[in-house]
Length: 80
Image (tube, rainbow, N blue to C red; front, side):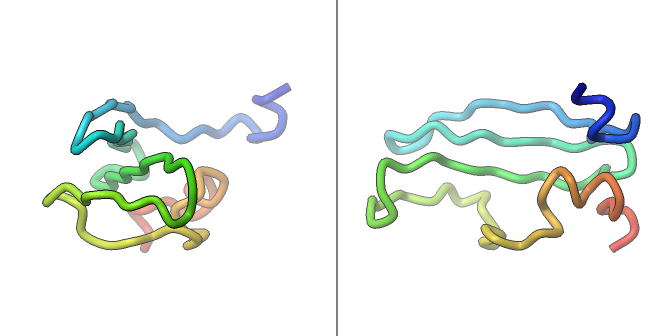
């Protein structure tokens, strides 16, 4: 069923879990057509929860549809 939704296409990535300042970050390193893209996210208990950003965080991309996996299939990072 999932393959049908993706039309046979997929996003290739490896996910790493990294603990930093009391939070676990999910860091996705992409390959294939999205080679060079690295995205990190952290789950918070609430919107106002404070979080110490690691020094390797560059910019906030929350809400930017270019970074959604569904967008990366049809508009890969290599074409930006």
